[in-house]
Image 1 (cartoon, one colour):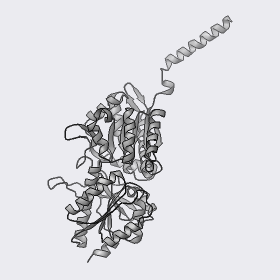
Image 2: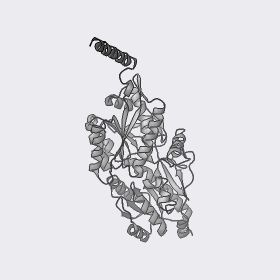
Image 3: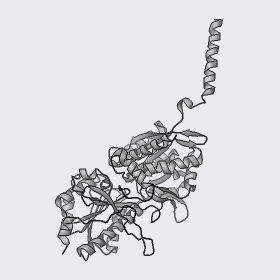
Image 4: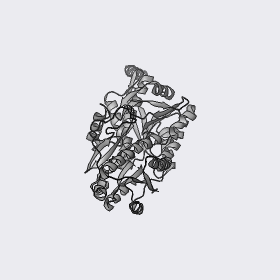
Length: 442
């Protein structure tokens, strides 16, 4: 019995030595858990996951994020929000990320109706949620209206709906001017085609006004379902309207059948505006090559550079995932360039201190942004929204040229007569489709 007691004493002493040699947590170092939430069966969610994966792997390869006096690696948790089809599914996915998976941060979200609901859940739990897909202005105006509750929300990408609209109207005017000059069309007629979705409602109404303000004629407005698979009725009506330009407002899958069927019918009108699906490499195959010459506002194009950070990111993404990143892949930017530095500056995972760090960090560059800066409302209250304009974040416009996705804007762009001219490295001129030239050139 005495020998057994001595043996147990030796074992406990050995365990104590091991414990002292390896401090608490060394055998299972605490990781920073980041939830990536989005429609994972669609291009938008796939981009969100891929961008986050690339950022996490690059950060972890360098030892992780320095939090105080220790380095912590990132663990990503994927959550399929199914938000195109169900807001309830989206809120349930967010609740699981926070309550079951115990994430420290969340990035992603796409459909504004769903993100507004998911935002409330994250805010209730005081979890920092950086949006990487939804454009609704309300997501950020809430921060100004109720800062104490909504301060844990930040917009990562895209611009808000107002800035997106402003950018696409600039694209519209740019293309209209080219058509007037090259095809000698005295007055351009524009058809507006917008998916039935919350983010597109105000955008559509504004477009109808801006088109006439820009000296063009509104040919009509059509609102197909975001997931429509047949839009021949709308296209036939557009052709009868005599529209020269089709101004698209698409964030969902309807962008594929619309472009494909327009190409099959050889509608003699160019497509300009927003078509998120057209910003993905798979668009060419999905439209069977019929999406040629479709132009859309976007974020990335292989060969086009905002600054010195763009090329390494885009080429690294293409090398790994075999496709050009869509704007939702800016989960990479918000993790690598926004969240990680804010955590290191705060020296803690305390959300309130990280919010303060993000607010007070100052202006910085990112692959899709020459200067990241958060806006305030007219009363000086934080919005946690992104500044838009030359020298800051502008986005780009891409167009399909015979199977290749190229950047065509900004090209010799001046916001005002006194502004500096902007052309990003690698941008090429816009092309009018040959069948449109054939129809109108005299």
